[in-house]
Length: 386
Image (cartoon, one colour):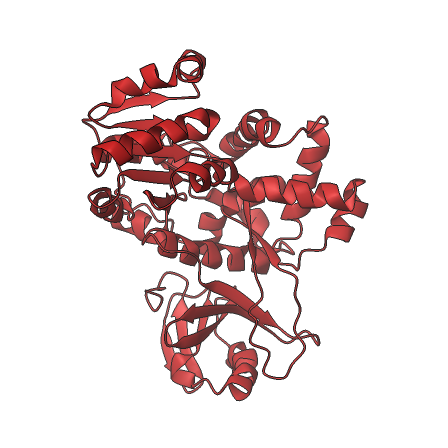
């Protein structure tokens, strides 16, 4: 088993909160992780029809099994349990009594906000990170191979080829999550919509364009984007609000949590097809952003990632917000570094007063170099971000 970076934080907070909640995409390793960390606890999954029926019909009887604590997988499927769990943990005063997991963040967070607010620590577990794979000597040697392969644990555990894994993953996702989150009758149309989203990776989200290209309404696009966010298929990178007397764009940019899934939706069937693909740069950008997002989530923290773009199109790919200010990062897929990589950051620095020592470029090469304009980082060396 590849050790998950989030493990120690979950264990630490299980000694301080009565409930631990872990969300994340399907097959990101939630069940494996929790059963490994809390192996002596009673376990049940509400995806099992008989178990789910028991929990629905007799929630008190179902929860009696958890007198000494336990793990409830896909807990959002029986929302009636949450108010009973609240009563149990309030009465017992124990920490780490219930471990909940789920792959539908919207439904799970909705139930938590109603019944378990202040009683649970919430974690997001995404597929493997660079750091996790490197420590297990499993990180692939080129960034193109990592983009194509993706990071779901089953790909590494069972040695499944991506073209065999992702189409089945998408079908499973449609059958399980989409039907429960949204009343979508034409699943083929939804798959087309997924492909259109993949074709816009790294671009500003344009609801009207998506609606026109897919032949659906503007409101349907908004609803379907929400479904994809709630089930950890894609995320929206928001623009940073610092305007420096500039007019800024207000629309977010669209990215996928896993680049392998995005490649599958783009009909990319082998690594070599990435070499001259028109979205290679955007997929590399997605790779780096999702990696930095994993680092935040693995520390139990919320995202602090944004981008910056003014109305004339001058853009910085990534703005990292932290207590000491803002850190600009440009992301370039080229493997040979170029002085022009820093041009947009230099312009942004003149607006913001930021210094070169707090300026960074991540590129597709293997060497990291200090320049007069800032630090150039290999895609494999992202430790400048905590």
